[in-house]
Amino acid sequence: MHPLRDALYAELHSRPFQVLPSPARVSYLAVMVRSEQKQPEFEHFCSLYRYFGGVPPKEDGVCFEVDFGDFKIRRDKHLEFTSYMVTHRQVDSSLPFFDQTALSCLPSDWLSAIPGETIAAFHVAVEDARTIPEADIALVKGHFEGMRLVGSRPQNGDAQVWTSFRLHSDGCGRFLIYNKGMSDSQLGRMVQRVVEIETYRLLALLALPMARRYNAKLVTMDEQLARTTSNLADATESLDEQALLSELIEMAAWVEATRAKTAFRFSATRAYHDLVIKNLNELKEDEVSGHLTLTEFMTRRLTPAVRTCKTTGEHLENLSMRIDRVSDMMRTQVEMSIQSQNQQLLTSMDRRSKIQLAMQHTVEGLSVAAISYYSVGLLKFLIEAVYDKGVSFDKSLVIGLSVPLVVGGVWFATRRIHKRFLLLAKAKEEK
Image (tube, rainbow, N blue to C red; front, side, top):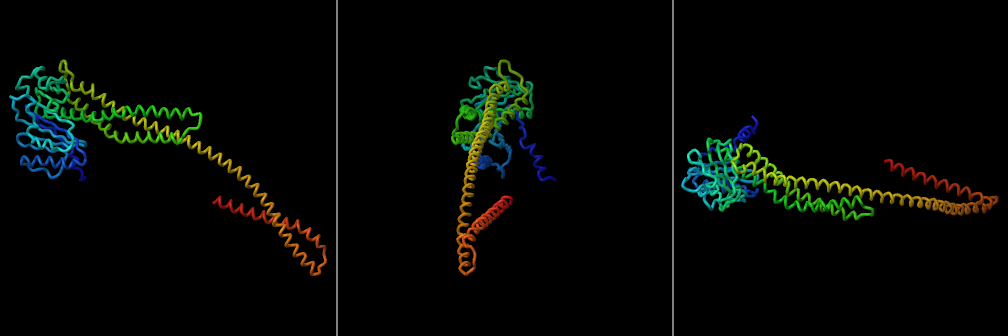
């Protein structure tokens, strides 16, 4: 058996849909947790077990669901955030829908001490339209503090969903769901989709302020790069290559630093947006006359925001490639300038080597004359010594005849030595 076989089977069941009766009250929190906060957050969750007399888990996991009698809490751990869904099934029908929330079942000091930053907080009031009459639009609007409503009939009309997609006086969002003909399992799946739509649309929008902040700078960088490219293309005089290279390096550094800061956020935005659209499609909404559906509202504002983030990311990639191309042009121009300077240097060196060779030949001629002069002088001492010993010959004639012989011998020896040095140098170059 493969060692991961059991884990692979368990993965498909790690986040089961809830079974939700109606009426019920559901509260949902999504808390952004940094890596150093994950262990304290798990320990804080375990303290809730001890508060209500339960036995906490020994190790952290993807999903925990525990029933404390009056309420049920589910904790899901995601990549960036941890979610808490609290379900309260004992509904007091005499109270307004959102005056009785599931969060009231939890200790207030425990709630305030959850590690991390809350990105999503909202309440879901689930009512059974089969036992109570469905409220009219004016009454529903009163539950949302008079705000403009977004509503639809999901699951082919088996339910009705109302929301405002705004924060209310309690600092939380609100959803009102009337169950017209759904089972507890179907209702649980639908509420889970609604919860994920609201959570993921907020997470998808996290990148929008970042995109807007960098868009203004990107426009400036575009203009600066266009000027630099124009200077390279239209240059009629020598450019300050060092200054241009420094400018390009500074631009490239800013672009790469910005890409490092935004790459994860922009890719996460696209992933969250895909999840929102998937859940919206699974709702199978029908329109409520005079109101935008959840899908229409999301595609009207969320999709353009996601496209803005996508465009900013593509703008960064495009600017990075353009800077690389201009840098290549600059490097090519610098290399051509260096080659031209090297060519001039080689020409100058060739000219100097020719002068040096001419001087060397001159020096060699002078050397032959000097060596011959001293050799003839030495030979003269030898001839005079022989003549003084009584050998009879014309001393002046012999000395005169020795001069060309000595000069020829010195010249021949000098050429042999010079030729030998050239052969040795050539042999070293071939090696």
